[in-house]
Image (tube, rainbow, N blue to C red; front, side, top):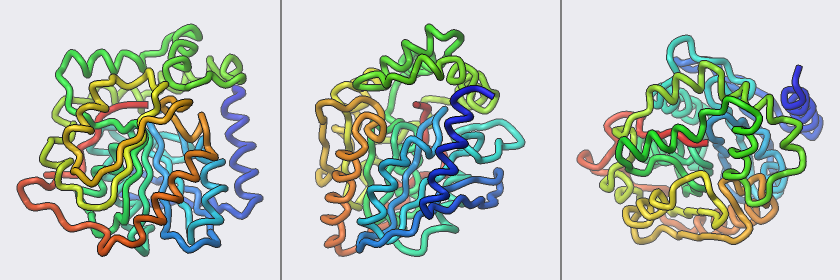
Length: 308
């Protein structure tokens, strides 16, 4: 067993000992794992969604901080990630969206604050389009799903083609504001993670058509916070500009210093505080979201483009 799998086992046990439940939910795609944390605060349920090649565990510090602010915090793991089972067939954007939408439909008993980083951000947007009444507010951290041409998509996908420890170190440098001290210890494990068939099949199936259209983004009526760290060297800056142009006027867009692609790793305290403050402000919203018109709604739960 590599260092990363061992660290993940220890982190899972630590969460469980702190009162966070590990649960599995059956979907039509596969069995999914989530961390379910009861909270003591007045805010609505907060959902945390991760990116490709990751898991819910990097959210652990954020989850623990939010437990005192919200009634419940859920950190879900995508098919083939963390402790979730891999899909029996190819892992595609459609497969991802179907599985995660089914999980959220079954788990949410109130409109939630849905937080998504990278590919998790695309899942959050697609869920808000398909089930607006279940989403009180969206917090998107460097979300995937921006429109791009085939050459731009191919260039982005190449970033995840990790074949050596050197590739992993270059990936870490793109990912974080300040590369964590432990990354040399897990470089080999990360290469193996991105070489798994689940992730390879997702990369092969990604198409430009999976991006959100301007009409879809403009139809989002719930409060939206877009966070794009100034040190994010993973996502093209053009993706930020796509969201800036096409999100509705009420969306708040922030570009914080000292944050890279993953704010839950770079500064979990600041990220948790910003989520809580935004969620508090969103409580005054009259409704969690109006259903988009048929012309602008997602035609299927498949609008999700690849990212970390």
